[in-house]
Length: 173
Image (tube, rainbow, N blue to C red; front, side, top):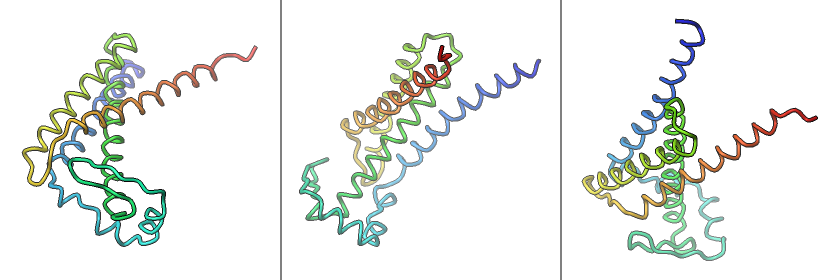
């Protein structure tokens, strides 16, 4: 086996490992109770942040039948965005890792991204279902949409980066 073949095999293994690593992190967090993930005590210690969030224009919404208001309860407001942001980032990385893992399958790029999206949606649905089995957690279809949104954002950035890279590699003349 030549050096380039060894390098290619290692590259493939690392790409699948990245997807498996993302799945492991998602499973770990999905298995924790809400109480174990509660960052509100740490957020309360950042008094300046809490004060600045309270000064923002009034923002109110209800999620999972729980009202969230940046002025009445800025700590819960911050906590909500940290948790949902983490959802989007984790699933964004999972989507990229899946698309990269599928790179050498012979699928056209668009189909590879569609397969990655399909796998991601299945994982997100299973994740939300699993959360219904964990103490003080709820599984919500809204979170599956949020997870898919994270994938779409990361996939868009990957597409833009690939187009920019291709453009930069072209000769200027």
